[in-house]
Length: 238
Image (cartoon, rainbow, N blue to C red; front, side):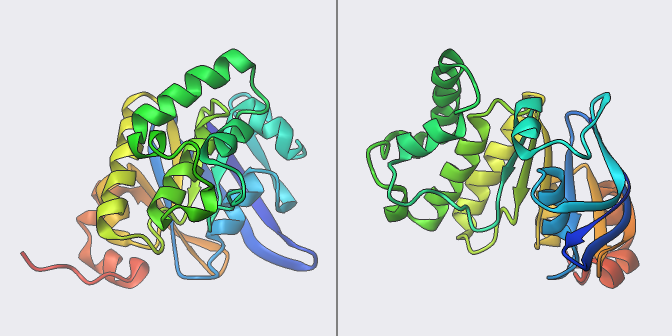
């Protein structure tokens, strides 16, 4: 579905990611892992069109979108849930969802809102509530729902579990698994290696803007030395 070929990107004179080659398989969950500053968020925001490409290319489906605008990428089917949610706090839940579907026909908006509320029933009880008054978990659900309003074929989520209670993390990942079952391709940035190994089909580990490991979650999970060295998680005892 998505291919990054020798992609370097960054801000001004600073290069955040260097010559990354990465394939995102259709209908699978891929996780980007690494320490703070590794280049995970920069990669996602570059795919979304918000971080400048310095060299290399981005291909989506059969088209090269390296120089496409963020709007063109949304219309092509790419949606991002940014770190920190970045909702419109003074708008209601319903209004935030409507904004997420602004580039789609009104009929699609109605269908997509029904789907979002089926996925996150809690939002249905808060449609008239201002987004800024929601709990952190509810805001994350709304941010995911807002992205889904654009009818994406690729959903990218930056720091899905960051700052959330364990119960809410479980609810969000149940929703992500449901979206995968329905055929959506998903790219997540996740600080929790344990969660990534449980839900992702493939992993890409970044360190200081460089890719240091790629492969399947099964392969990573069967290699304790790899987990310890590259992913920063000690093997858990039974």
